[in-house]
Image 1: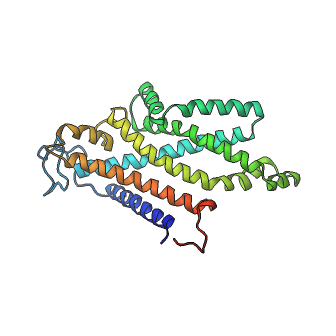
Image 2 (image 1 turned 135 degrees about the vertical axis):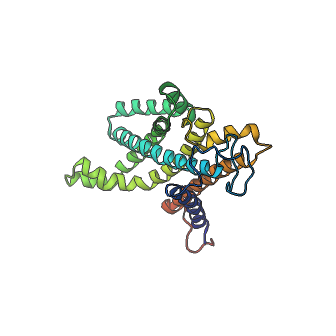
Length: 275
């Protein structure tokens, strides 16, 4: 198995493990999310496989619910950022020179703000909630996707087959659907996969700062915040969400890296070279 196949297989395995656990949580949970009947800061074992938190809630239950939020944020933010970013990038790519220059300046200004900082500003102004966090992260992501789409569209429009299509009388909407989008889709897919990992980290960071999903819903970021005061007496409360967060992000990044190797001809190994 060569490097790109190994990265893709390992990445997909990690993501599928987390996704499978989250899907199971919709059918079964060890305890109710608001069940505080357990002993406070109980160690792993017995009915509580990972122990309990400082309120007596089951940590495995909280971890599974946090996984729902992490995956939901990744999918939601990518959907928002992808739709807005690709649409804006397509418009900029087809715009006149001065409109394109203006769009480039606006995108550069937005990208100058770190994704987390821009998301924090949006959440702070609108109130903390899961929907707001997804929207904020998606809007911050859209500028990055838009700039990449703009560059890719301009590269495709310079190809000879686009000129031939125009000479043949094919309309611009059909050219976009038949030639532009299929040619830029692989690169955009890889970029959106990378952005999904950043979205998971951004949501965890927002929740750690108290700007993400509000209680009583669990979030890996808030679990880490709540566990820091008792990390010496109950290390599982910090290790479990931290390990889950690292597993998901590494899995997404390895998947994106594997997809990049598969879709980028310049990164593929020639048959005569060793794997």
